[in-house]
Image 1: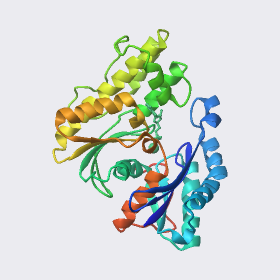
Image 2: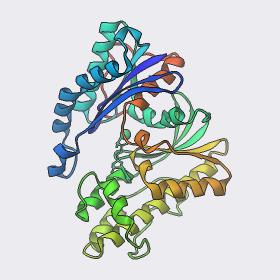
Image 3: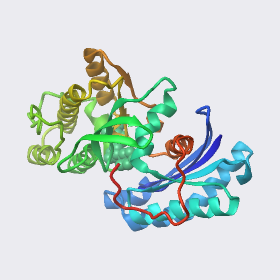
Image 4: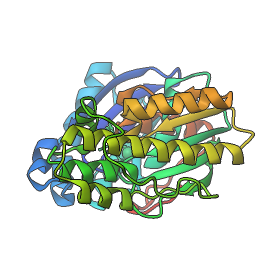
Length: 326
Ligand code: KG4
Ligand code: ZN
């Protein structure tokens, strides 16, 4: 089985070919950091226009690299939401056109499902059910992943996503865009105990997240050592993620593993702390390789394979959705 995946829901334009044996036959990602950097964040219309320019040539490239024609595909999978609607529309309509022209089925993939199943692309031994910490620029959720299309939301953020907090703190500290990797780099030279910062919701009975107050506290503390502020902020995020995930593990005794996915899962301190939590809890831990954590099309192609195997395909009138809870 071979599926072409398309991703364009935020600021990465991506195409990938993945087969049923979990082999990524070819993949291309075109980032847009340069275009958005002057604005300190993703500008939706600039992103959508860049997807229009780039997506079709990337598809051409992956097909050529794999030496395949569209007739060789088993399906076309495209992100249909959630995300910046202009970008989602570009990828979804491209997927529809390719499916129509090739006579192959279309699989409309929820971007969050792509992240949720990305760990199964990386780890053939990862079975359902598992507890997923999905943490990215737009989302911060704990999900019980019970099967393909079967997700139970155990917790979510009541304000900002963790990645959003990294991006805003990077802006406050003058570290530029995108913020997550810049904060992580700066934190390496800082003392995580230097600046006292709050741990919102830590100790509360539910496992929800909150990062807005933490960001405001960094704003109030700004002016001191940037590495110390970055390290203290990162440690506060680590403590919140670990505490909330520990509570959720207690509420999901049937989970066989703890899994982290999404762009923030690329952070080394966060991965290490979750590994320790899993060890202490006597449960396995899976974190996909960094390139599968941030937005990519291989995870969309893989979610397409999983959905196709489960018997799900979509009609050509399936809508693009800016909001689409799992
Ligand atoms: O999953 P993703 O690529 O896009 C969304 O679906 O949101 O996640 C992007 C987010 C950004 O907020 C970025 O700052 C954050 O992930 N991120 C990181 C790191 N790399 C990316 N946050 C912390 N540490 C990192 N190393
Ligand atoms: Zn994402």
